[in-house]
Amino acid sequence: MSAVTMINCCLILGACLLSSQAVWSQRVRVEPEVTAYPNGSVNLRCEFTNSGTTKLTQVSWMFERVEGDRHNIAVFHPQYGASFPNKDFEGRVSFTQNSLENPSIRIDKLRMADAGRYICEYATYPSGNEQGTTTLIMLAKPRNSATVIPVRASSSEVVVASCEAAQGKPEATISWITTIAGRYNHTSVPERDGTVTVKSEYRMIPTPAENGREITCVVNQRTQVEPRPFPLKLVVEYPPTVTIEGYDNNWYMGRTDAVLTCQADANPAPTDVSWTVASGQLPPSVRVDQNRLLVRKVDETVNTTFVCEVKNSLGSGKKELVAMVIDQPLPAQASNAGPVVGGIIGIIIILCLIGAGVAMFHKRRQSMENGEGPPKHKPPPPVKSGSSTEMDLDDDNTGPPANGGTPAVWDGSGHPSKKDDTTDETLPPYKPADQNDVEANYTNVACEESFVSKPMLV
Image (cartoon, rainbow, N blue to C red; front, side, top):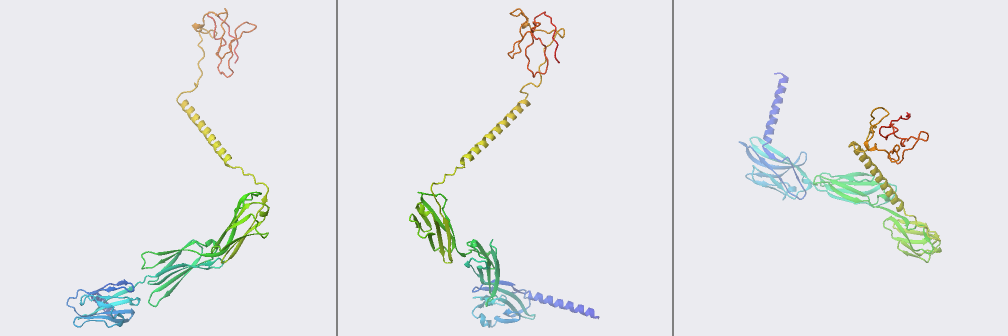
């Protein structure tokens, strides 16, 4: 037999042994992993299945905190009963059913140090020992907290907020939600009992503008159903910044009840507000009411410089205001309401005119489309009979005129016919200049009279 053949045989034999051992080990049914909490209880299940002709002689539970370091904590023998040889589990471990087929155990008053591997091992005949392993994972809910650290406004980066998840297992994670420019750092400290304490600090350059701004610490950990947020408001302390309000440049002689108000932005809150004047003593017409300065009547004495000073625990701030007294009150400023209203009315009128024009245009266009309006052609000239110099006359006009001569001809415009001074002939009526067609010079002629038409201008 060649060496290659021998190697192949050995590999096949080894695989068979491993597979048979796997089949045997599968007969000890356990849970691969269970979780529990300190001071709680846990059940570690174990069961031998498909025993067949295999005889079960004894079952043992072993605890392995570190790889390879095993300790018996519970033993059950069908003849001698149960025993618990390990003092660390004394009074805390028990069999739930005193039988070889189901030797599950219960551990009470759990500790973080109980985390590890628990091996349920059967002593059998003739196959030998068979076992199954359960890993106990101890969980610990962290004690979460967050706090704001009051700081003084400065140009240096300092810690302004802190967040902590203490003694949790597994280790918690901390994040920050804010629009404030800054950075944060994490520290993780293992505890003796196997838990971990995580701490995070947020650092930034504090300015008065950041006072009261929101920042949120978020703690996430396996034992929590959802992330735990901790909303905070930053505390940045700074000395007072002072402003004076109420002066309108219209302190005229005899004016009453003029008021100045001293406003201060400070953290902590101001503890003292005082009013003084550059000249020393406050004018007799002035009264101070906390942060307000009341001028009962304006006179020459209030033509001075007023000073407001505000103090808090960090320092003080002041502001000066120069008051100028005038003889007569300033004229009231003209209201801008009139021009605004006039402009609005003008716009409305323009819009109405535009609308009317558009409506008339559409109406005229519609009339023209429907055939209404003035005719688009001129009426034909009177019908001539006989020759070009003779015309048929209306029967109503054949009678002799009242004066025995040729009847006067009217064009309906109010202008009567005229006679030629040399020939004594009646001239045609006046025609408007905008007519395009040329009509006959004589339109009414007595019956049976002949005439010669005058030359026509072309």
